[in-house]
Length: 248
Ligand code: FPP
Image (cartoon, rainbow, N blue to C red; front, top):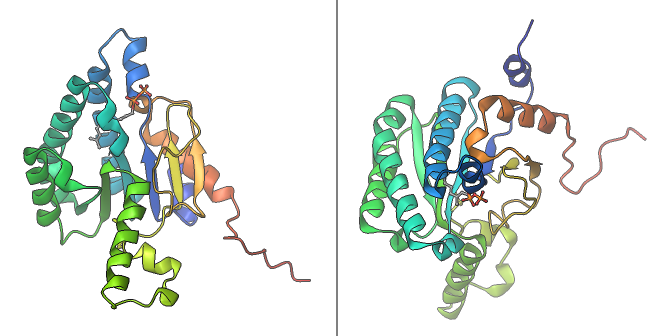
C-alpha cells in the first residue's frame, strides 16, 4: 500500500511552500502558559517541518514568516524573546543545515535587527551559500508593502539618474528588486491559526498562489498535515488566468 507521501511524490510537488505560522499565543493560552512558551514550542514545530521537508519530501523552497514589520508593536518582553529565540534557532541549527544541504536566505530588513541576530543571520547565509538541497527563506523583519516600496524607490532613483526609461518598467522589473528575487513565487501558502488573511506577506509574489488555511494552531502543525495540504493542492487546476485546453 503506497503511503500518502509516496502518492504525493508521484505527482508534481509545489516547488515553493510558504507558511504563516500563526497561533502560538492561543496554543499557550489554552494551556495557561505564557505567550513566549507558545513561541518556544512553535520553533520546535518549525524545526520538525524543515527537517521533514529536507529529508523526506524534497521541496526546493520553504519560506517561514518568522517576524513581521508589524510584530515590533508587541510587548517588549515578547519581541525580545522572539529575537533571542530566532538567534538561538539559527545558531543551534546551523551545523545541521550545513550537513543536510539547507541553504539559509532571509527576506526582510536585516539592518533593523539586534546586532547579535544580524551576525547570526549573516553567518548562516554565508556558511550555507553553496547548499542546494532546500532553500530555507526566513521572512524576518519582513513586510510585503515595505518590500514593494523599497523596490519602487530603487526604480525611481534609477529613473532620476537617467539609467532607466520609465516606459521600460515591467512587472518583472519589480520582481527582480524584491527580497525574493532569486526565489520562484510560492505555489502554496499555508496559514495556520484559523485567520484567513495574508497579513502583509508576499503580496506581490502570491498573485497566482494557491492557499491553504487551517484552524490548527502552529505548535500543533505536523508534517502529516503538510502532506494533506499538498495533496489537496495537487487536485487543483492552476490556470494562471488562462483557460484550460478544451480540445474544441
Ligand atoms: C504568530 O503567533 C507567530 C509569530 C508572530 C512568530 C512566529 C515565530 C515562531 C513560530 C517561532 C520561531 C520561528 C522559527 C523559524 C524558528 P501569534 O503569537 O500571533 O499567535 P496568536 O495569534 O495565537 O496570538
